[in-house]
Amino acid sequence: MFYVFLDLVGITIGGLLSKPLQRFLSDKQINSMMEIATLCVGIIGIQGAIATKQPLLMLVSLVVGSVVGVWLDIDGKFNHFGDWMKTKFKTSDPHFAEGFITVFMIECVGSMSIVGPLDVALAGKTSLMLFKVILDLITSLVYGAIFGYSVLLSGPFVFLYEAIIYGCASFIQPLLNASTINEISAVGSLLIVALACDILEIKHFKVANFLPALLGPIIYEAVLMFCK
Image (tube, one colour):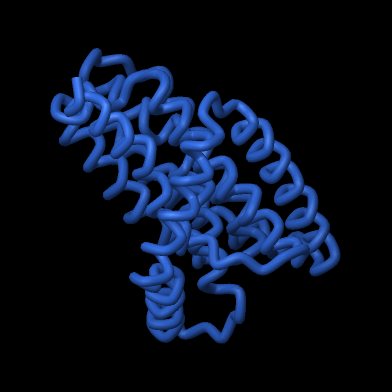
C-alpha cells in the first residue's frame, strides 16, 4: 500500500512544481507544450488500442459502456466536481475541470495502473509501481504547467482507484489474466485517443462517460468463468 500512496505523493509533487515552471513559460510555449504532449499521448493511445486481440469485445464494451456512462452522466458529475473545486481554489480558469479529467484519465486507464498494484499486493514486486510513480510525477508536472493546480485533484482519485485494485487483488486476480488486462488497456487506450481529439479540438468527446467500458473485459471474463 505504501507504493500506491507514493504514487499520490508523486502526482502531488509534480502538480506543485508545475506552478513555478509555468512562470518561466509564455502562453505560446504552454500552448505548444499542450499540442505536442497531447499528440504524443494520442499516438500512445493508438498503439495501445490496436493491441487488442478481441476488437468485437472492445466495440461492445464501448457501446454498452457509453450507454451506462451517459445514463449516469459521469462526465457531468466530473465537471460539477471540478466547478465546485474551482470555488475552493478561487480560480476562474475555464480549463480547470479539463485539467483534472485529463490527468486522471492518462494516469488511470493504462495497464500499469492495474498491474502495478497487483504486482505489489500479490508478489511484492515494486519495480513497475516505482516506474509509474516517476511517470505520473512527470505527467503532473507537464500538464500542471498547462492546466495549473487542477491536476492535483487527480491524485486522490488515482490513489483510490489503485488502492481498490490493491485491496481486492486476491479476489480479482482470477479475472485479471494477461488477456483481460490487455483488453482493458486497449479499451482505455482508445479513450485516451478520444481525449486527445477532444483537447486538440478535432472532435468533442465526453470521455468520462465512456469509463464504464473498462469493466467490459472483466465482465466478459467473469461470464466465461461462470459458464465453465
